[in-house]
Length: 204
Image (tube, rainbow, N blue to C red; front, side):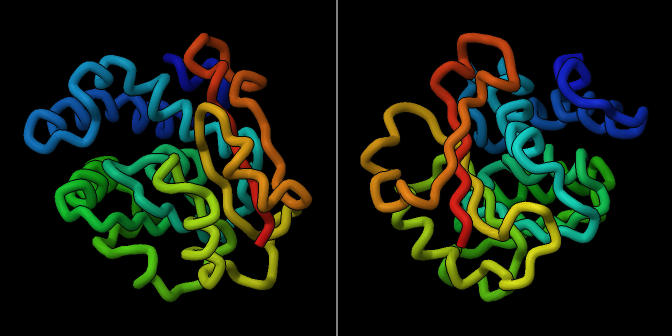
């Protein structure tokens, strides 16, 4: 299995990752959260891509993470499988997408996941990290989530925002060139698809 090539999994985690294919195919046939042509690339384009965050920072037990614009549950659900001792809150403004994320989390028995239909502006809780996959331009996202970053760190890395994005990011990164760190996903994962994908970390 693709995930176990890059991560050491327990048998329970391997089983949870293996269930994702059937779960997302089933839900995608009812509520389209992944493009029809992309469902065959679920593990590479969605699950493994989400787990680039785990390559960047192995979250300490007790870490709280907010996934903004989670869609059908990415990157939150793959991260929640990998870090069962961390707490993940997945939010999206679109109800049907949150329904899919919630149903998948329930089917997998992920008790460390909470799914909420809301806009980022409405979320008031504090978290160690906010994560997201390409939901909006970086400056807009930073403005929205700065209020949600807890002040006291529990990981070696300062609390902040971790975003997965592709393409030319120079303009978006310009305001953060002194603070942002950027890492190519191709340093962790093989395959042409990852050659244009990046992880951006901004301490907040």
